[in-house]
Amino acid sequence: MSGAAVVVEHVRKSFEGGRIRALEDVSLQAEPGELVALTGPSGCGKSTLLNLIGALDRPDAGEIHVDGQNVGRLDDPSLYRAETVGFVFQFHNLMTTLTALENIQVPMLGRRSRGDREKRARELLVEVGLEERIEAYPPTLSGGERQRVAIARALANGPRLLLADEPTGALDSETGAQILDLIRRVRDEHGMTILLVTNDDGVAAQAERILRIRDGVLAAPPPAPVG
Image 1: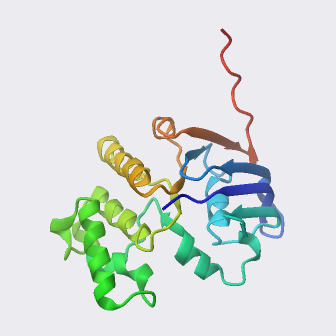
Image 2: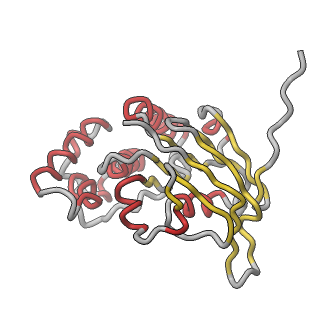
């Protein structure tokens, strides 16, 4: 599997009738299989941009293309999200009444048979190192374990683009490093493109490229060292 190509062109997004301008004029590209970190102060528009690329919202202006699809004009964004994108959030968004095995199967409902869903979920739990916690419910899991389940769930349908919004933000430094290592390993093994939002410079430094957003615009990269 190869990763998705992402092209963002002059995207703008505001809220509350234009009173709050989240993104002013953002353009960027991510190559297939690339791990790109999006950094910047809280409220600068990082998560908004991720939501637009994931078709959880639509831009007010500009275009977003993922493998040639104009994400802002999709007739069925849910199909795009199911087939192309995996999401990992800071606070996991797991269903507390479902086991780890059942949570991972949720994105596959209506797309695979029950037997295939369970087989895939078990394989993913092994991949993220949680084969012994298959029947555990989220409240009984540690923060790192819950994030591992969330990553496994994001991989359920074999996405070509992984959008990770502060995946280590709620974790201690050691657990966060383990989750980051897992994300990098997942990228290396599956070849997907990853856009990772973080406020942690140490996390961002693990990416191939860092893009900084400030006040809704993409900041110019620092000048290259001379000599």
